[in-house]
Length: 194
Image 1 (tube, rainbow, N blue to C red):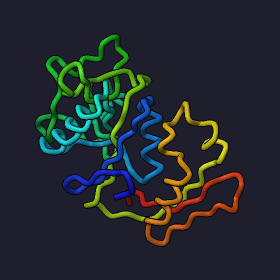
Image 2: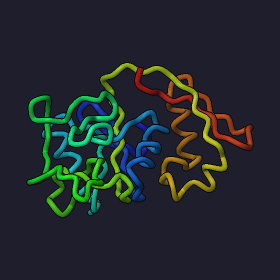
Image 3: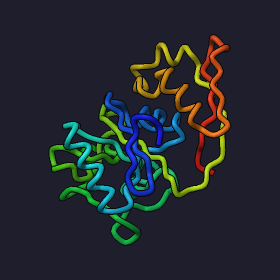
């Protein structure tokens, strides 16, 4: 796992300590070759709930959404339906409810004991990134404009842009390169789903 991430079962998890929108959280995770966490079991759910509780997060974004088809929540990585029939769920009572016809993104919510809830995707919440260790990876080149590193912190949580962490991630990734010679960008090869 990358430095500062936690291993659990067949995944590595990184947690965004700075609240972000669901979209910004997705982008931050992608910089590490990760996705927002997709809960596949009660044990994984208990692990994430335990972290959220210990950090007293108000909410923790997950990788589920119904923005493509209202009322049909899917995991973003594979468009797999989130339902009791097709896999594990842990929605709070009466959830998801699309309150105000604007709740399209899934999260763990402190107010209901960190059960799942739907919320507007623009809500600022902490988030869980997941790198699956039981999937095949290929390498992709990522160029992050330095301007985004310096000025993008309000839109994307700073943990995703800390240059030292990016450099360490590059060094830990097989055959990855970190290029500090380009004053306008940070260049790194990261692993992404094949």
